[in-house]
Amino acid sequence: MRQVLPNAQHLYRVELAQFYESDCEIAHFYSHHHPDAAFVNNLVVSRIEKGERWLIRNNLLHYWHETSAVHTQQVIQSREQLHTLLTDTFLLNVSKATSTWLMERYVLAA
Image 1 (cartoon, rainbow, N blue to C red):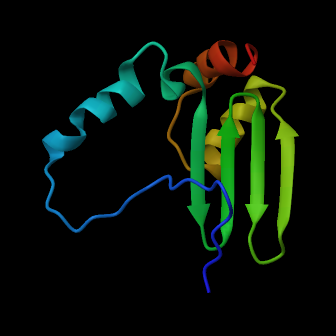
Image 2 (spheres, rainbow, N blue to C red):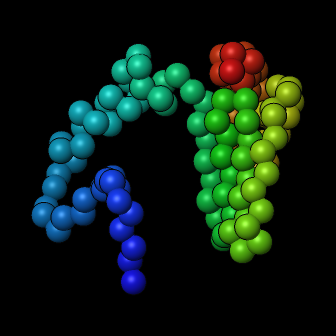
């Protein structure tokens, strides 16, 4: 049975209506290009696989293991650590120069 909390608000509404890519273009543009958008002003990297979740948000690495209810948080302290996380944990093909730029732009600024 679904419990509804007092003063709760719905975040999403799902409809079965047909939509087109053009319906999403403005929101997509805003979230990736507008100077005030979260994805423009923060380093956000996420990976979800088999009950595990990894998330980088600026200078923090979060890890969740759903079956054991473990949640850890770790501060990213070096370019080498960030580069290893991006390549080994998040399986991204990024150069060390890119990791250095991300470190300076987002991690050290946090």
